[in-house]
Length: 376
Image 1 (spheres, rainbow, N blue to C red):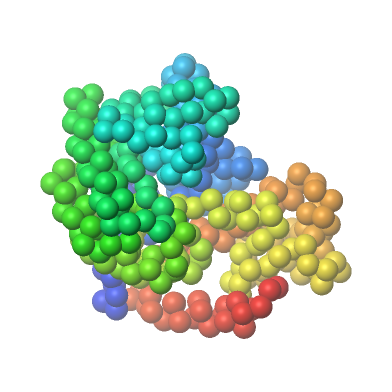
Image 2 (image 1 turned 180 degrees about the vertical axis):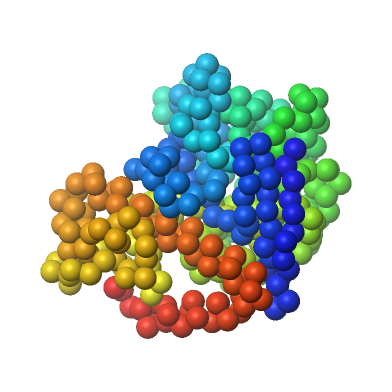
């Protein structure tokens, strides 16, 4: 069973430092989890991830269920062994994929009926089946099946999603317990962009003894200020003695703001996806490496960065690789972006430990302001 130890609470804000202990190791929070959708953080090896000091990665239940399938992963004795990763791993339940592939999914009281985006074959996820699949995957942290509602949504629609999410959370938890409570199951707060529904969802889930809690249904098209408002409202509703996870968020600025509100765990495809598109994150803002001004630039992406890419390659060479569509570009760019995100979290952990989070936050924005207002 997962344990969470709160090591330090910032005296300046709700930011906090903690540790999560799982069967595959300890995680120091706040932490960002690189996304390995189909058992791979795109373009990176497990050794690359370790060099970037990744503590935990995320896998996707929906995608892994469809391909390679539970038979393969069961034969390989779990996802850790299959992909060559011996540190902690979290898997989501598929709820966000049913939101993003809404035309292929139909929500029912029993669960979600859907067609595969790969071959059109028909499938069904119940909350019990979502748990069973994740137990086969062998993830350290599993997520309850939820109904993720997009933006905008009416209060009636958000309430329907909330009710199903709560019912599925109870069913999934009971099934998990009946199967021996292997690994750890988190509940997911829904409620759209309505504070009273977020409160209701949190209250209902707190009646279930989950080892940790997540906030879902954010970064689904809503304005940034509304996302922050919902997170700021919901995070204090969750138990202080258990991990708090905001799913699918976000930009470096999001991580700083939400850490200050008391979030412990994050994931997002942004650092790896943007890397493949030539957008690189730095201490002073974003760099679009395709820009002509980098053609003869001998400097690294960020001279304050210690990643493998910045220590060995120039912007000029990285631009050449990107423009030539060389596969090496994807690896080098992704190494940099993942390293940047993980190092940002490490800086925040250090600042919390030293009671200096607000000073860190001020410096973070001061470095970015000149470059953030225009494209690099």
